[in-house]
Amino acid sequence: MQEKELRRVLGAELRPSGVIDAKMEEAYRIIRNAEVGQTGSKKPVIQKVLVGIGSVAAVFALMVTFCVMNPVLASEIPILGGIFSKLSDLFSFGQLPEEDTVLLYQDNGTASVDKGSAGESASDGQGVRDTAVYQQTSGDITITLTEVYASNQALFIGVNVKNAQEFPEMALFADGTQNLSVETVEYYSFRPDAIQSLRHIEGKFADAHTYDGILRIDYSEINVDDSRYQQMLDSAGVTPEDIGQTGNEEFWLTDENYAQYIDYYEIPETFTIKLDISNIVGDLAEPLPLEGQKSAEELERMSDEEWQKYMKTLPQEWYDYPNKYENWWQEGSWSYDLTITKKDSASRVIEVNQINEAGIGVRSIELSSVEMTLNTVEGNDTFAVALDADGNKIENGSSNAYELAIAGHDISRVYIYICDYDEYMDEIKGYGVPGNHQDRSFQEVLEERAVFKTVVETGE
Amino acid sequence: MNTVNTLVRRARRGDAEAFIALIEECKMTLQRVALGYLRNEEDVADAIQDTILDAYEHIGNLKKEEYFKTWLVRILINRCTKRYRMNQHKAYLEDYSEEAQRDVGKADVEFREMLSILPDDSRVIFQLYYGEQFTIREIAEILGMNENTIKSRLHRGKEQLRVALEGR
Image (cartoon, rainbow over all chains, first blue to last red; front, side, top):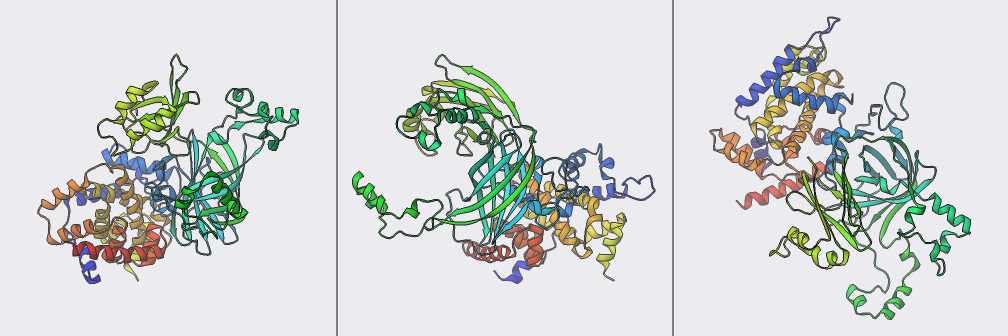
């Protein structure tokens, strides 16, 4: 189609719409009647005029919540909601709540305005925050933290990565996401020690130089206090390297002694985190071939002895992470200070407290705007699964199987089934795969074979 | 002296009529861009109304007068996106077919048909580039996207459009 034709059609004068004209006239009426301030100067106090005017007031109330509580001006609102919105279709937890998201850095280079809640730091006293706090450059890589949302279960941080050089082609998952990983050291105000971690950022490359992603930190990963366990080891003169050796089984942390040695820090409503990143790593779309590398079919045909012999021929570097065969990475130093305040109007805990005679059941479920955590009571040989009101399986959004992504699900009613682990993995799970076993539904099979089941009405 | 710039300066000083005149200048743009997001006329009307009120509230902070239209369209797209997400479950295809049966002009029919053919991720870019004749740079600013991404979407979209039209 020729450009001229595109311009003609897409730039056409459309017929006037009575509906649109009426709404515009209503807006003009409101503007013309805008209240005059005490000084006599005309100022658009639109909010007061709108009270009591039907749907317009409701719409404007939304705008007030979104725009005016955060005194970021319309021209400085992140386009299309920033990274959380950009990735809402891809991200495993869907669209994170805009009303509970705090903007840290904005793409037009302006400073974000201090709301007095999450993200307080380096303010100049007038509420304008120095953007350098959230954008750091080391070598060719600039990492910007764009926005943050903290529920009662996890912390989500928008991350933009810009590379002065072109990124190599990175691996693409079936769901369309491309992940980067960052090696971190994290200092939280509610615990005395630092946490070293390898964090995964879920997102996508916008172009050859730019990556947008969301970093999720689950509170269960940062609230474990193992100081009593460490004290026990110190008293016994056992080092972490010694623990794995035969004969040291008494020093292992097990289900039986877990409660004896492990406590949990309470995550306060407001806390600080110093996030230090020392390396950023990606997985190459096409790993470099190793010299003498065998194909998958060849490996399958090998005996165990042949396989072990083959693995010893592989270069030591291949076993490292990251390595040049499988990864791109960039070491550096990017450091951020964040103040986080938990804010999610949908956060709540529903007590269930149903345990059967075998000691299996559900204590509670924790809800936020985007996820549901199952707090079950189980042994090692069971597995829980949750279905929504329509009988659809609610999948996990993170590597933790019980942190479920609720976006797109009707969770007014939640069916929770706990099954024998092996039976679930080998037989039952397949019924939950769309297209499989059309003769019976997943829920029918779970109803029949679960060792525990319950229904929770959430009132959502 | 540029009329638009004069009107913007007056609007920033609280002159309601100057602001309304600016909106009237951009009315067709607002309608066409909103239709790229929201097929239902009521939703389009509501999104435009939200945009007008939002813009009037914050026009004092528009940095450069000559960017008024770019700035206004950016606000509109934000409102449309929000409204689209709120109503995502609605059957827009059904709304569209009902509207197509009404007595609308040929230009409207062609316009809506073109929108329905355009790929989802390129539709608004096509509308802004060909329909409203914004530059690549302006579109990048409105949508918060990289200029190269805009160009590649235009290129890819035209190819997809060509294939779609050949198949008709």
